[in-house]
Length: 626
Image (tube, rainbow, N blue to C red; front, side, top):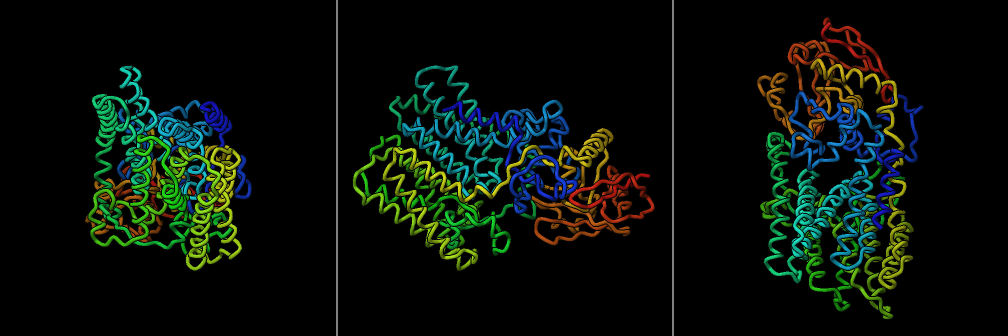
């Protein structure tokens, strides 16, 4: 079964197929005449992906692996999972591979990085399930449900990115522990070192989600290893080696990126932000089965699709029902792996359904997770718990248990849908709610009643896929970020600017994404981690506007005028607009040379350099050093 995921992965890479949103109209030279092939519509709401993350990967290819110049911010490499030194070059090995962009087509490298977490999920999770529960097939079902859940579709695969590396790391940890017990030291060393490398990526993901879904699988693996029949010395030796490997690689990675991390933790926003648990609506917590119409509803809902999306949390009460109604047939080690996942899932479920008050904000690490992110993540733990429990389930002729499980799932789906209808999704109709409830009940009944039937598993997978099959596009290539005339121009201009140390700035976030994707050094763009305070002092010597630019996840935009002064505005929490003349900017920032504008500029220092089209608009590039 290992061959199938590998073959699919290789085919997707060679064909350059992804479900990235970089084919969106905003990133097209001419939206009415896009290059390449795209089936389906891009998700505008996922601008973090198409506007920042994917362009950063493409920019790394354009530079041939050279460091990303970020004139106003500390390095973005840590959160972009790109190498910034020897340790991160190993841990972020897929980011290191992007240096081959000088020789390998961008669409192949982009697809390889895009699908790698999914490949690791489909390799690691079935192996982990086979080792822990004696059944790889339930691991495959878990991988499928995780991959196609609404939270994965509307979060550009972020849950998969986390769980893929964690699952593969935990699977290798089991291999290493077994080798320690068998005194096969070479095999143990290789497996444990590789496990540590994969697990060391955990802090670099979107932390609120990684805390919820990544840590429980690690705890389950540790609990399983502690319950093995090897001697305590062998068990503790294996666990100690695995922990040491993970701690070593994580420590090296954090040390290498310490300046960026310190800058991020000391920002005015989000800084050291703390959260506590509080109740969300039942629809948000249990409503994943009702989210199949999010694409057609568009942006009319009070909350956007990303904030509403989740995974299949309703499976967690189903597990409780099945556990209470049957006798446990798995071994002690199997139960030891399941209990931490269920316990942690129950905790995070309480975080988004019960008020924890001010003392919830005092809980270390936990207080990094807003209740909405607990809502998103707990459904993935429910998937793991359900499949891990079902791996020991024995089909019975009794109808009461599968019927009770089905009624539980159907009721929760219907209740959640009704809650969504009365608040966040008034577009949901009564027939939609009843249909989702009926399908949820039917597939849960089928899987519990005929747990060994591939038809039952397929029905559950198809039902889940029906919720998200139209939510993401199928993109062949990398859109206009390489094949268009404008992209080719910026690839050349960016290379020249890297060579002579000059920088650019624009008035458009879409142009900023184009510059990021072509490796063009730019003052405008995304400050993901935190500011380079010394560089910002060139624009704000007194620090009067520090609260506006000392932020993480910040979009930096320019608005050109004829003023000799520099003014700052913060229209929203994650966007700062700097209003000034390109000539004034050139005086303050010695590296600045090229100003991009959709409107004509007539500053005394400016000469027209060139023009280009992007996002349906024509832009002029002005040279401020004429």
